[in-house]
Image 1 (cartoon, rainbow, N blue to C red):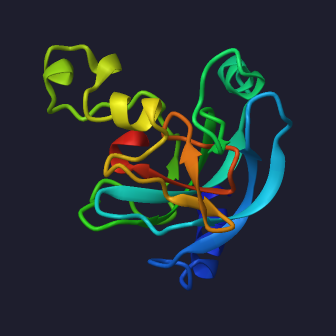
Image 2: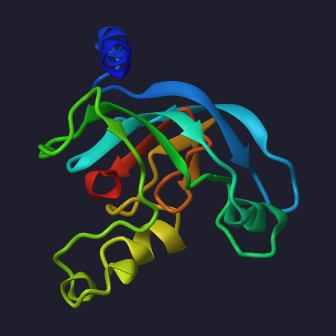
Length: 173
């Protein structure tokens, strides 16, 4: 059944590859305020990135901690770091995934090339941790989300409270 559904999905996405798309997302505009369902723009994946259609997501205490302000976050932000979906498109240089693959976003990815990863401390990967987690950006220093022309930041490189998300290819399995 999964392969059949993937084929149906693949036949409907040819017109979105390489283009920005619009979709719905639950955006947190500021701490202490409820999430707001917004129409957002999701840029196409850049080199070594994938764009995923999110099919399932869960709510974690980490999401709630950012939302209620007990943990500092960068707003506006799309929360959600527990999800799964189907690869919609891939950026240049991605060979380990293709459109239609079922994937799970990883909130603690590993590059396998930095000092931390080479020493076995993959939970503190220097390539991803500082850029993706602390600042809500992808590895090139920019977000792929916008709403009404304003940037919207990523949460743990996953942002599963959006119908589509762009992630580094090392952030999916």
